[in-house]
Image (cartoon, rainbow, N blue to C red; front, side, top):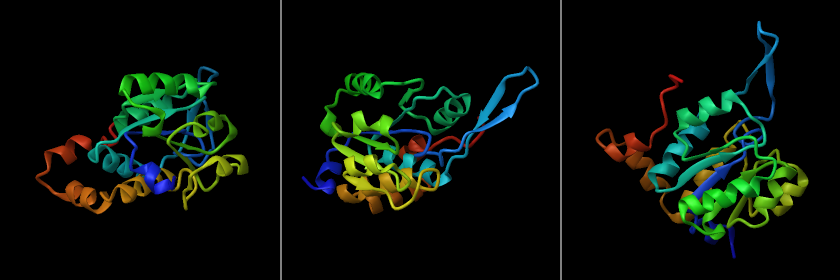
Length: 193
């Protein structure tokens, strides 16, 4: 089955975080209490892509091994339907998502960059690797994004799926329509985290 045919079935899109929605760098700032404060950079292109996907009826989530308040804040700003942090075995979270969304693996797309993502990528309907992914992850992918994580890989994944569905241009125009209440509801937050 072609990657485009796989993309046409997608109802839920799940992202890894570090190396996919970020460039993989983790900055730790020392706090006055002796604990570190973790910061990461996210791409605004990915955020808008998430709005487009949601407007086209796709549910969005993240599954990540790390626990991070920065990620929790960004997930809230993005209005993600599924947020799973601290996941050493990501299939546990995926099984929960499948049950909550009432979908099959064929209807799930997953975007990853490192070997921890392989168990999901090997079984999901559409496996996507970011351009900066490890060779083993690219080998397991049905599609590799043109841009690396933290620099639009998430948006590339959304654009690929919506293009395959034949809805990208229509969804962009719906998003741009000032009087479209559905577009406003699908849109991400305004950064007032």
